[in-house]
Length: 106
View 1 (cartoon, rainbow, N blue to C red):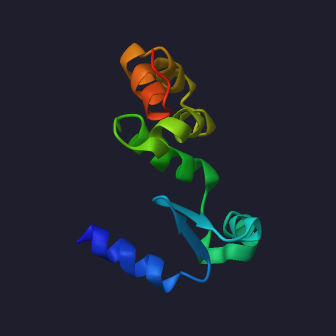
View 2: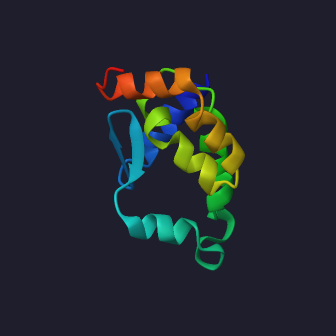
View 3: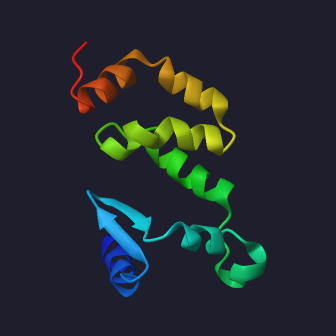
């Protein structure tokens, strides 16, 4: 059900979003600037730290998604979870999996 809702929202916002390799992005940085400015976005305001927290919480336990390996540590650090970011970087199994995802054999 949630997947269907997300797809419907993405379809409705297709003029503003780009979906490539499973990653959703705004078509222009000005959209991010607008949504993260409380005065301009009003009720559509998105708090950057909260966004990083959502992505970090998902990515820290994800072991199969390339986005999690490429961006998880960044989102942990940006959401103030430096200790968890360092824990991932010291997790040998996570590192091996992240390297293998990039085609590096250990």
